[in-house]
Image (cartoon, rainbow, N blue to C red; front, side, top):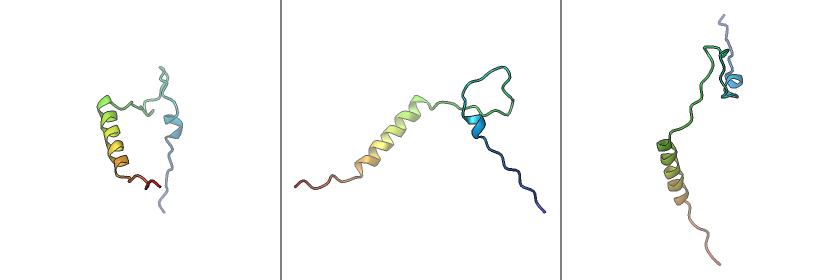
Length: 57
């Protein structure tokens, strides 16, 4: 029989605060770079441009 271990990182991901007592397995969340945000915005704008405007009456 195979045992399964469930692990949730949600508790670790909720806080971005760090301290000297941070366990070595704690999840580190980095903020996206300015270049990544610019590329994401450009992609979002291209996506929005694919929608047609509703006909005017």
